[in-house]
Amino acid sequence: MSWPTCTSDRAGPMMPAVPRRLVLGAAFCLGLLAAPAWADAPPADGCRVAFDVGSSGIRAGATGSAAVPRADIDYLAPLMAGRSLDDTVPATVAALSATSGLPAQAGFDPGCRRVAGGFSAWRLALSRDPAALAATLATIRAKSGVPLLVIPQTVEGAYGYFAARQALGEALTTSHVLDIGGGSLQIAGAHTSFGDNLGQKVWHRQLCQVIRRTSDAPCVLQPLAPEQLAAVRNWLGEKLRPAAQALGGSVTLTAISRPVTRGVLPALERLQGAAGKKDEAAAGSTLGTLSLASLSTAIDRLAGLTLAETANRVGSQPRYAAYLLSDMLLVEGLLRATGGTTLKVAELDLTNLPGLLADDRAYAWGERYGCYLERLGRQGLAAYASDPATCPAEAPPPRP
Image (cartoon, rainbow, N blue to C red; front, side):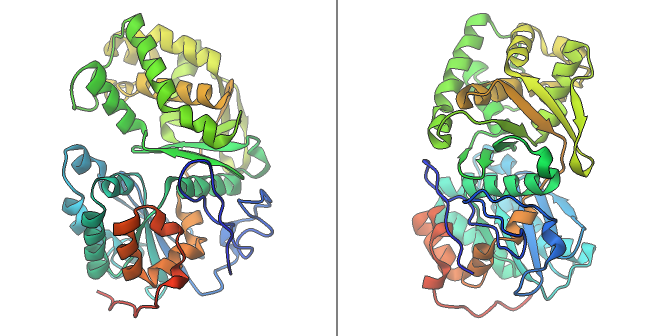
């Protein structure tokens, strides 16, 4: 099946339309969003296994299986220390192994086609040295048998929108989904998408460097003087200006990631002395709502406090509260950049696995991986959007 390619005003493709075998009549580009369970119909080319390789670990999934085994691997730490991802190769190979890694733990069929998607940390490594990362990926493929692709942010955003639409169904009433990870963030909808290497840990570290002159993270940002707070807000506004250009005007957002669901929203509820407005939604999830006005007021109240005072006010441990102010500022900046006055919050355990399992292009690249790596070294992220059919077919590597 040939998929059309969506594009946004920023460089990089959005995820192609979802195959009809997975979502009847659904296409990200066209916004036809019928959403039965994606796993009800297996891929026409047989079973698939996918690996979601994020900034803090790997999660695996397979067609026809509800199991999602995980391996915790910190991919951001070596990059923030100025090193490459080579130190993580042994743990990555061990997790990808069909005979002793995550697929074996979950009982996935070892004969399934396999592909891995690398996200925020892998994009950061690619931006630093494409040739070196291509060599690292070749080593991972040789030792594990699994091709690992570096997935563009707009494609990752589309994966998140796909998964949220599947989980929430009609309860997803906003135009876009906001996903803040450790190393990057994505805003994705049916037609437009925006992504930036400004995840929770990256943004916090940037504030530490600018305000406290340290590369240690987390650092103690508080207290902030009013003029410091104003400068940070102005700085973040400039950094997020491309979001409005990419999204084409005001959008409405549902946040689906832990910095908001486990951090910002509960803290606001605690500060307001109420349980907050919540409605039971589909799939056993919980939808909450926060307003830009209440968020800005909370930031103004917390900025001048010490970290210990903040942790006490919101009922959190200091190691978690250390990220709260930077998280709040990031969410506030995103709402302002997108013209929003409220943010829906969905407590969901989402992964990129459903979208990756549905992505025919990714599996096509897995069969022409040598060509992909060569293009990755020359073209960077654009390699994913090029046509795998223009590469010669390759013999699969022997299974380790």
